[in-house]
Image (tube, rainbow over all chains, first blue to last red; front, side, top):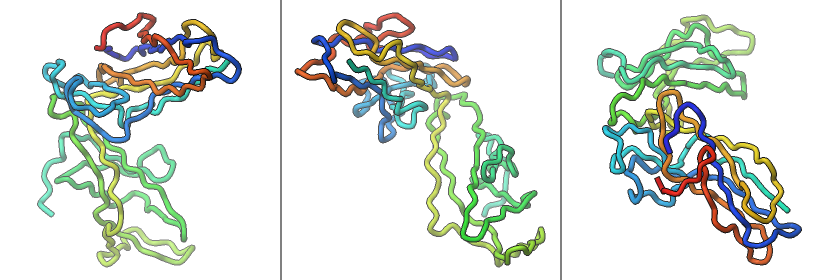
Length: 87
Length: 187
């Protein structure tokens, strides 16, 4: 997904496997990686459980093998706010 | 210290801020790997048994080549000059002598900073509803924005889901949408 100055809206949709009942809830967020990894190539490039993989497109040229990808360490906005849905 | 040469072209001015001030007290260039803030236009007064927060902000030049991204920067206090005096006693400008010099023994260097050509920012967006119901619904929504320095590419997002549903229920068929379009490829 290429992202420019105009924000891209990212939505996660899902379907409960059964009808929710009282006290049912789910909570979702995206957390920050605890340590820095990168620059690496696209997966499988050695990232260890990345919560986010992003590139600054600094590879010349940028490709699936260019070493210009990073994980979610210190990414602005991570951890994201938790969103909770409840019955 | 080696003789000073030209300022490091990878950086613009390093500004020194005192407290919550939004106007820098002084700005200097990085020369020979060192920043020297001297002849401060206003002395930094540290109250007895108190502290003053000093912030240094770096103006990093634009990344124009691949090998400039991922460059690392760490600042550490090397030495300084200070003098103590009784309350209400002014210290004259220029009164600091070489004997007032202190070194950075015991101080921890700043966090390692890594230069990127550009960076993404993730911002959570409000859901239309937070009522958990049967059927497909949006369970997380956020925006990704690139810094004005350039576009970014995101290839992996891992959502952290806490399941508080009874009876072994799970979330089936999670789907990712970008600007309303379902994503079926991994990159």
